[in-house]
Length: 252
Image (cartoon, rainbow, N blue to C red; front, side):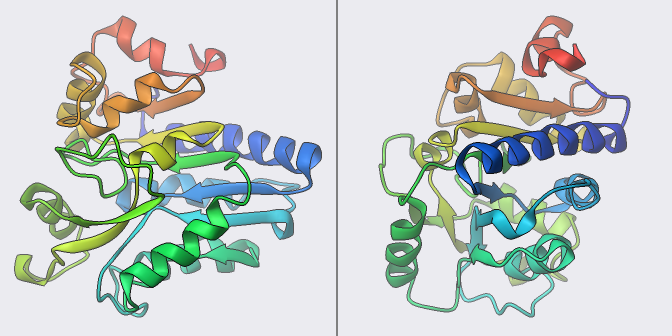
């Protein structure tokens, strides 16, 4: 647990950079998945400042995108990643989800690419309703598809409004493309970046309750190499021993 989201972001970025470097040394390329949303601002800012990262040998996938969302819209996750990561460091190999195209075609194309080799590291967040990517409760824990079309629940849509991406609730899309739970779990390493008090109830439900589709991010507890970075606000409802268990050993 970290005192604030800035310390959290710096620590998570340091670990992420180490894992990326190691993958490049061992395999010549690091295949990563990046999350978006307000909770990732500080983490991505710190990651782009990490020294000696060979970004030309990084291949990027992302978790989700709204259907029928133009890449110029402030809420577009393609726009988000280009501005905060891709253009900042010069990643050339990217596989962005085009929500304006036929969803079946997009899913088929990106599935071919993501299944060419394992993902080395996935960066994820946890939604206020416990969602993982856009897999809202009850999440599909069974599908083996890499990406699916999902219906966004009201709490998820209200989170997007609350974060300032849309002017009105009715403007928030109802459907999106999302990486599936099982595809996320295929990553060799998962780093969850989860700051802020608004995530505290979701964190409590996912890490002190049952592993359940009703708390989608609870499935991270089944992964042998998943680490959850919390600040004192997001961890406020956890028992101390639970909070410690979620962190990498170097921060315990």
